[in-house]
Amino acid sequence: MKNVFIDTAGWLALGNKSDEWHLRAVQIYQQIARERWRRLTTDAVIIEVCNALRKPLLRPLALILTDNIYKAVSIRKLSCHSILKLDCLNQTVARPVFAH
Image (tube, rainbow, N blue to C red; front, side, top):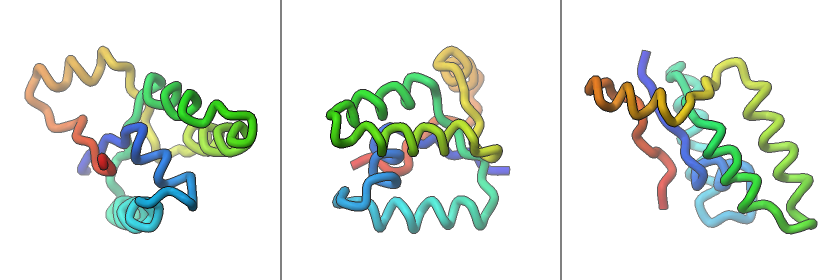
């Protein structure tokens, strides 16, 4: 099974229809789902998503997006330490997909 790390920009593009990268993010995410890649992220990334959506008008989006991330069985939440450890062991894990 292939791994893909989804960073802050990826989640924001996926969750925000007005983001300039939204359509591309949706296409990539659907491909990842079809091909059954293991989706990886961290609590730090989720915190960054919340911080980016901190304006009162965007808070409902932040709640929906982070709830969906946490509820998704197919998304594995890694600690930052785990990513560093796997990277040190030369295992392909953390490569941003949706970076601008």
